[in-house]
Length: 414
Image 1 (tube, one colour):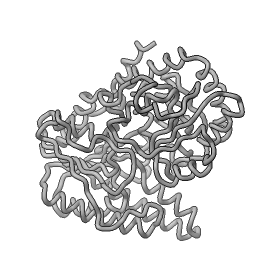
Image 2 (cartoon, one colour; image 1 turned 120 degrees about the vertical axis):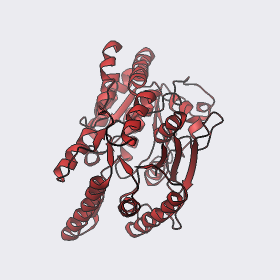
Image 3 (tube, helix red, strand yellow; image 1 turned 90 degrees about the vertical axis):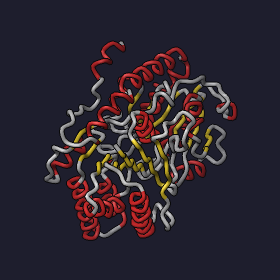
């Protein structure tokens, strides 16, 4: 099968799937947006990659202006043009669209229909919800309502017209039903991390040698966008200091959120802000932490599942997730022995006792980290995941896919 997997974000587990499918003999073209700044997976061919894998960056002839509605829309439409050129040069039996922005995908939906191209929507976010929320913050009520309705209309048509939809959690399927859509073409496959690439490593390593030391090192790695409140991380480290807990904080991110933290902690030696790191050093970076931290605001929680949590579990470290407990990622954090607390000052206060205990108890940290890794090894088996995607990509007639099909195996984890 000739597969074109477009992951706009270039994240680790999407290219991990492309490698797994290529290793099974499929001809896989994995493409991504060169202008989107975020933490990337292994987007260069490796010596042991099969000959059936190609990786290509896609560049629009317009700059990406992330927080300008007009500039962002112009970029997304021109990105569709650049992606179409790549598709025309590389015929595929099936195209997979992941993390592709709404306006790009709305234009591509029509292109796929005009060329009879079979395509699968791998749905990571309900973009129309975010667009509607942003419109309500910036526009008069009537204009905001019309903007939300237009965005929902576009996304509804995208879900309707995809030959198959891979949703990352059950709330997506419920939202489709609310839109009046049939969900017979929808399967749920939870996000994962590449456990053969992200493995537990010593806390003290070549990468961590440049960091300040303390009894408890916290680390946040990933995007800090509109779905996150970066100042909560500043509040967290300040409250730990006030409680005389010897801790420091490392942020690996770029963009507006990282800049806010850097400015707020300019003279604070307990906070280190670093740019996104190469995929090759990600295991060492995550291993440098005693606790890995995730964030998600309440309005984004229902449909946004922070994939960084899967990477954190794979790294074998305790996880602190400041997000609503209803978020799909929360269950695995709680099961591992990590802590889920609300993304507000009350949640930060709740975290202090747990973090203080971990600072004084290395054995407890190791126990939680071990369980985190065990959960990742059971749930993130790429062979099981690739089996599921193969059935979907092959078209109608494949067996039904169940989300977290390996859950029953966790009964032996203690």
